[in-house]
Length: 199
Image (cartoon, rainbow, N blue to C red; front, side):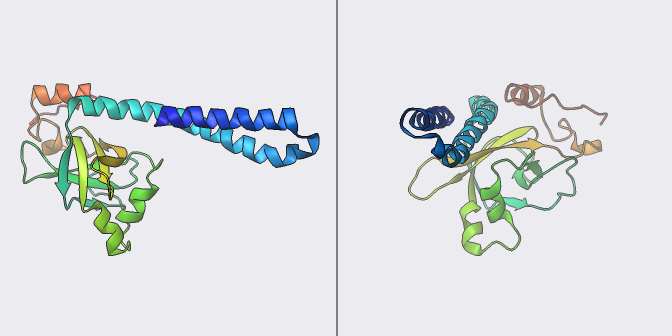
């Protein structure tokens, strides 16, 4: 879809320019400048999405989708997370299902849909739209979240989540029960190797 969007906005920009140059007088330049500028902005935006789309594919090559019901989430700062965060979700630790680990939206780009549903004052019908989410990943490293949409079977509104919990004592990847194989899978999915402290 990123490729289709990129081609489409380039076509719009070229089409507008062709109409302006070939069929209209110079008096119409003022009307076309905002349209040309917006279509060029969308071309740049589509180019910006490609690295994220490639990272999503990388995650999905390592981890399958699973459905998570009633996940914990929040927009405020998670007490165990360090650095920038724009919302977080908690998922069960695969090695210790009773333990929940937070993954964060590391940046705010394209998170508006999620933020409206994660807000503390969001209406119940909005929160219900993320009562069940799709998740691919390992919360000790990295993950991909998506929301089901009405009338569609597959995940939509995909977004990468990163592990940014404070690496203190028992919360290192090894402390969370990650094996060498788990760490290698995380690396293949695009997560940097964790700092292995003494335990």
